[in-house]
Length: 251
Image (cartoon, rainbow, N blue to C red; front, side, top):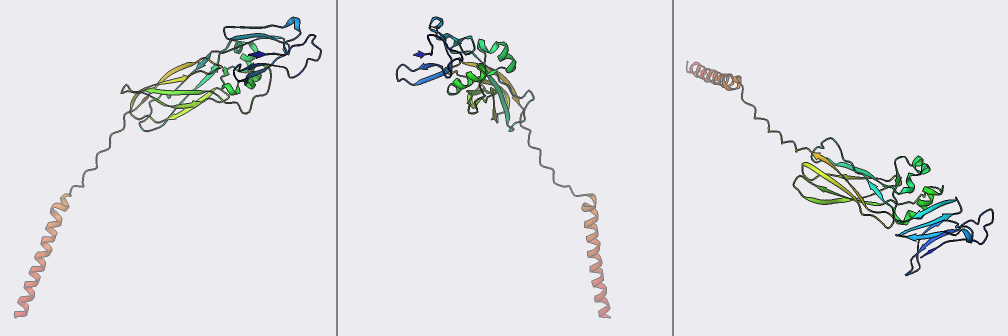
């Protein structure tokens, strides 16, 4: 259910604080709000079709179309082969590519694209993007699921990352085996955005083989010949010396 504010005859200055609201028809909870003053009764315009609401906003004299919008996801990984056992960083962005983001004002303010944002942060975020409101300090991004297809043809999820208010995310990953990896970044979509995905690849080098143990030191020629010979000569001298001493004693 949707409600909006209007007046029989609009006064100047305009009434402040008027909102258009989306309300859960089942339990009455508020889903989202947007600053909007529709105008005089004779100028009321609020059309709904195919999941989109179209209405005139008297605060800025623009026509708004509110509904689920498209998103764009990017992902990148190191272009240079990583050594086995070392962590790598997978990173990318998720942006809002709705028609409104292509307007001159939004394109100039966000040359890298308008960041996608979570459903709970959407009301304040849309006013920041389109109605010159301050940047929300507590805005939360969206979640990206990261998976890999490795060189053994195994596909597995490696984790999730949350974007910031720049639409940027990053994830540190240590590959389990060497070889080529294909990375899939998937944004599953929210109530505010349709899903999107992206793919990239990286390579992990083979592990370096263990260096062979150094050979045991071989005995030198001196160790093999001179040292035993020297010991033999010393022993012979000692024996001869002992015999001389015995002979002298006998005399």
